[in-house]
Length: 333
Ligand code: ADP
Ligand code: NA
Image (tube, rainbow, N blue to C red):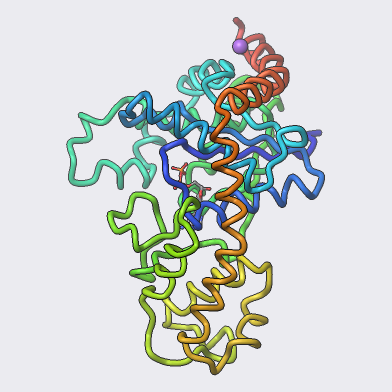
């Protein structure tokens, strides 16, 4: 009943990392290349749940668009657009605000984490209702599959709850119950300074991450200084047990090369980091240089990026608007 359609979004909050590439952008491009209908969104309305400098937000939106394209998203084959340009997101989110329950939102671990030790009363109402907007992002397209990171699984669960309650309350089978696209372990990239923390743009240490815009020297330097233990690499994947930093570097190598971890260890098992790190740096530079080069080329023509996003928004709107109109009709409006 519901044709396969993939939706995913990333916030334009500035500064994309190798984690975003291996965990999201690269996989988004692969889905597109499988010939599935893919809709990719720059979710600026989510970004403003915490205050953003307006000029920086505008720039981060274009930079994220450039990153999507540089990572292989073809704006012809995929629909690539900016959330705030398609009004169905906000309109459907309102309907979902009336379907979802306060208690559901209050139980979101990300809400609890983001307000932990702070005055939750001072958080924006938008931050609290964020998962309802996310449900609207997905269901405005009746998306059946969403590639999500570990951190977003609970929010997708809530999208499913909203779809289920809407279908139940209005006695329809209108929204699909969206499935998460399960990712391999190799797509979770950890900090280069601490193997227990995820690589993130919000980590205060720049040495903890590789930014998509880092130059070759910086990439090599950061990988050379990455925290590791002194033992050589194991011969098998089981040997990575309890060695979070070693596992992370092997994961990164596997992700960047498209090889299995076992295969990487087949080549590097028994060798020390003095051999492995330079090989990893060379691989990382060979994959990331063309991406950062393409990003800066695209960023030289912001008007062209805006044109592509405008066209993406028109295509997105053509799908979402009729779905929204049916929702209004179902609800009695
Ligand atoms: P958002 O706030 O938009 O969820 P993030 O910047 O945390 O933003 O992540 C954007 C996308 O990149 C998400 O799909 C997320 O799962 C993925 N991602 C971010 N950091 C990592 C990481 N270290 N490893 C794997 N995937 C990651
Ligand atoms: Na509209």
